[in-house]
Image (tube, rainbow, N blue to C red; front, side, top):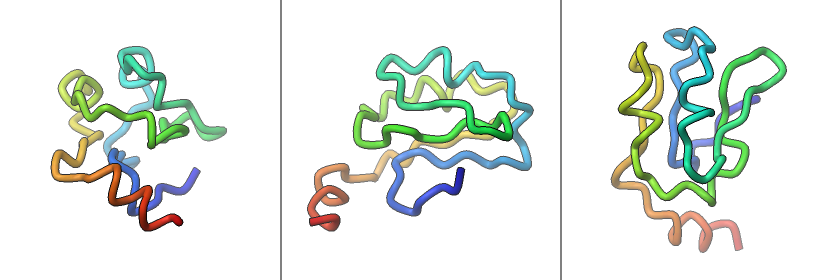
Length: 78
């Protein structure tokens, strides 16, 4: 699944080993495993930017954009 620039989460697929920790730890079930096994933000608007996925990734392959404004992204879509 291709990431969009307006997603609050960025996954570095080259660093990711597809362990699934980020998917399991997300309290809002934002992340899912794609057909290739890599995680992706299936529901980016549900992200509360808590950073749990970022903190628990053993390979530093996921980053939560702390300066991301979800309301601004929603406004741009309309």
